[in-house]
Image 1 (cartoon, rainbow, N blue to C red):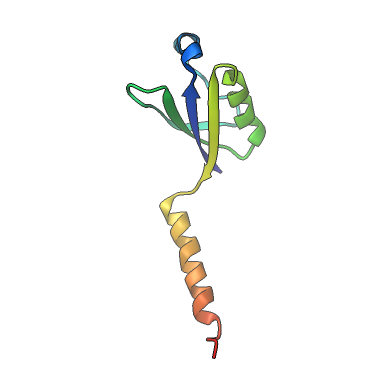
Image 2: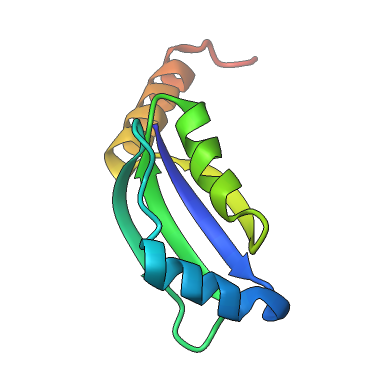
Amino acid sequence: MKFMVEWDISCDDIDDAVEGFLEMGAPMPEGLELHGRWHGPGSKLGWLLVETDHAKALYEHIAEWSSLLDFNVTPVIEDAEAAEVQVSLRVVEEDEPANS
């Protein structure tokens, strides 16, 4: 499953967070595949898109940075998957008898 992870660096921790990122590069633990990482220019926000079948791997990565960053994690699906769901819902609605 894919997860969009948003982070927010507190003002008090920004120097430590940047230093840690530049030194370590924030590698992904085994079982967590990184699809992309983005930084908001002029902000303390950033995002990464990861994929895993192991929530423990995602937790491990977040736990490494949790003393410096606040996180929001959202499971996400791609357009094609969302469209499949919407089509299946329409089929169900069309098969239901009309109320009289």
